[in-house]
Amino acid sequence: MPSTTLLAVLTSLLLLPGAMSQTRADDVHGSGMGGGARAAVTVSLAPTVTIEGGTPTTRTDALHATERYVSNGYELPDLVVRLHDDERGCEGHRGLFHFADGKPVIDLCFGEEFLALHELGHAWEYFNLDDTDRHAFQRAVGAPTWNSHDVPHKFRAVEIAAATMADGLLSIPATPGSNWNRTCVWFEALTGGPPPRQTTEATAAVGTGWSSSPRGEASVLRALSDLGRSVLGPAG
Image (tube, rainbow, N blue to C red; front, side, top):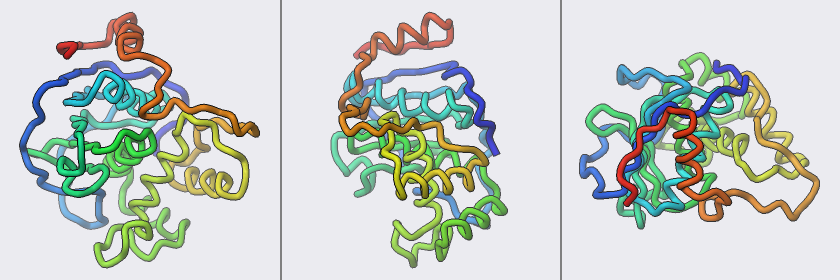
């Protein structure tokens, strides 16, 4: 299980706003218990994240979503994040975590912070949980399966896990209540610690979501550059 101690952000970022890679997924969305050997990929709090396509706003927000994981101590593998204009880039899904040529890839076809965090949640659980962890979480949430395709997506523990990670890491403050209490219980069952997301009693909180980030790409990259950790691609 990962530590929830606050730690530093990305060590390396590649922004490639040009053409998408056309390689097709080798393995799709989510992991399965006992599903065979895993790719020999390591995780760290300093992943290299290559972002392909998108606009300055959507690329910045994809970076923010990744930063929410690593800055809170949740290790990720090196990733390619591909931003698309419609569902055709995600095989009909809103987003997709899979492997292309043996490398972890996230395709995002809609601009939402929750969606980006959700797909990153699939990457996180794939590389950080073992089958014992998965069985324990499945029992904790009362799901009938981890990832059987015979069961609708929303009832699979793998999808509940990714949604729980996203809910617990959103930048928009959570409203206290039964739904948030459940998220807190599930998040701790999944990670071993409480969710980093802040709460508020106010209903006027305006989020820093996918399409409304208050920080421009230039300021984010400048902050990373100041740390001496960025590898910047063309500005696009």
